[in-house]
Image 1: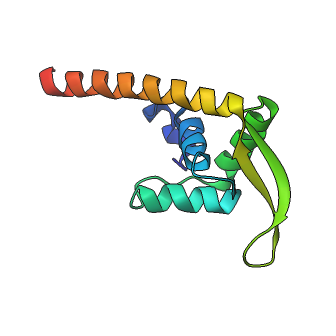
Image 2: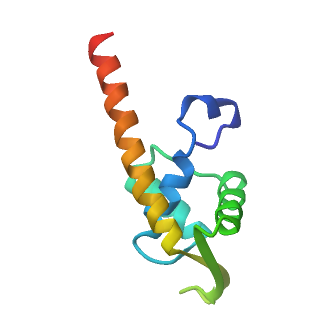
Length: 112
């Protein structure tokens, strides 16, 4: 996901969905979100800082996530993000939409 030239090959809203799903596990800081996505996807998905932080700021402005400053397990100060009720509703909608898109893509791949 890090290559801006390839933005056209992924459905719009994918990064938001990945962030919301990651935060559904509990509050996390930016690096933790990135690490979780990369680890769970077995390295297939990588989110660069240049994409992550603007998305988090946009999502915070939309009241999907809220951020507060905390100290990490390494003793560093970091902004931790968590889902709001609005973010939880958006996640449910996004998961439903993603399932529909995936189903449509599967049909095209199978029958095209």
